[in-house]
Image (cartoon, rainbow, N blue to C red):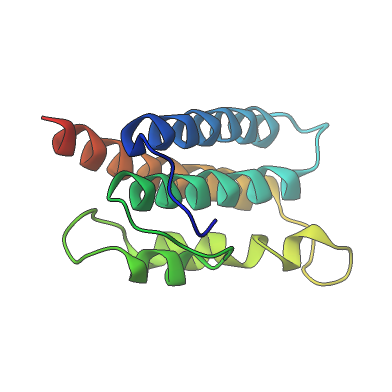
Length: 135
C-alpha cells in the first residue's frame, strides 16, 4: 500500500476489525487440541501486523508491503504505542517461515497460546492509542 485512503480513521478501523477477527480465530485454534497450533501463531502475527498498519494508516503514514513487525513498529513515531520487543520477537518468525513446512518446527499448544497472548497485548495497545488519538 503506497497510497492512503481519503478517510484514514475509517480505514484504520477496518484494518483493526480484521485484526480482531484474526486474533479471535487464533485464540480458538490455540485452545483446540485438534487444530494445528502453528496456524494460531500465524494468525496472531497477522493480527499484530494489521494492527500496526492500522496505526500507520490512522496517522496518515504510507507504507510498503512488509511483514516484519519490527520494521513496522520502526515506522511509527516514538511514543505512539507501547509495544514490548519480546512480543514482536515471539511473533515475527511466523510471518514467513511459519507458512511453509520445514522452515520452522510445528508450534506447541503452549507456544500458540503465548503468541495469542502477545498479540492481544499489542493489539490492545494499538487500540488504546487509536482511541486516544480520536479524543
